[in-house]
Image (cartoon, rainbow, N blue to C red):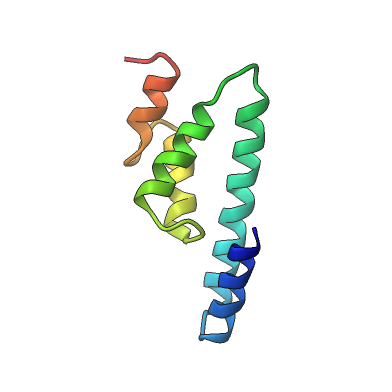
Length: 90
């Protein structure tokens, strides 16, 4: 958590626009929400599968990362097939 705050502080001083900063904060909050919902649903860790896939393919905290997770939870995007398989889809 401290590392993310430090990175945000460094980015803010290095010319990060307000839109980019807001996008990073919003995507971080979205990831936290998805993770908390996914882990409390009677062992359904499919949201965690999306987070892990997006974390390994896209820099966390970027607007693209938040979009990756949103798309994955809808079964689309680069990580969508992982979510569908996790839910038992074909």
